[in-house]
Image 1 (cartoon, rainbow, N blue to C red):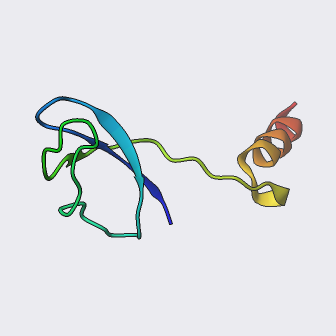
Image 2: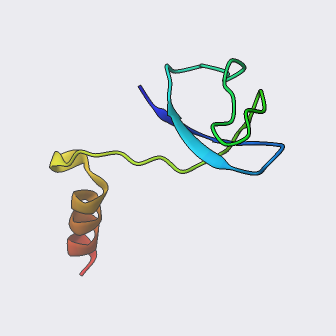
Image 3: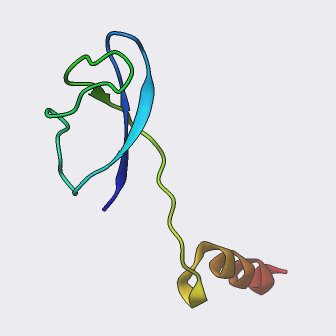
Length: 67
């Protein structure tokens, strides 16, 4: 399950929520002021992994073939 970031439209508090994919957050309330329906924020995502398909190994193989 992904972690979504929300911002309260009333007090501006930002908080994270672990939710199912596609959840809209309409049932959430701000943990600080209790306001309903916080705004979902756009945020970067991180992926973990590695192996031969990872970005770092791809960059190494490209740079070594040109140098």
